Image (cartoon, rainbow, N blue to C red; front, side):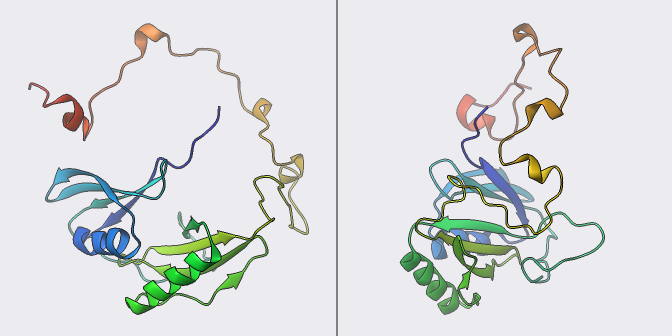
Length: 194
């Protein structure tokens, strides 16, 4: 199996207009899909030809408090930050200037060895990073393990170890494969009769 990117990251907002202004108008990501109605909207922004970021707009959602990117926490926790790649270091500097000019203070440029990054927050408090891959340092082509004491599982290497999970012994037969209509299907198939 080969994945082709992140189909979409799903986030939440209480203010879809501020979210559109930031992601579409400031960052330049096209608004390519919009579903729902007041009280339950779901909008999609194009990161690349295969990748999207989406936002649910739910009444009562409030921006989260800013947490420093990568700062350890305790207790229940799910998400630290998301990083978006740019093609050139010049584009990274331009993005930093745009964020700062719009009042979304970004961090200094940080050198991580294989990427250079800036950090900021969107209007919802979502921690975001923007990264440029340093020329000649592509960890996709040449994985690197810099952990001083990697776990035994990490020492197995970069490639998937499919024998670590049970084999599929009861696949869904083609006759039982069904796809049910969900939000958005009416945009392409028309309204389903009740």
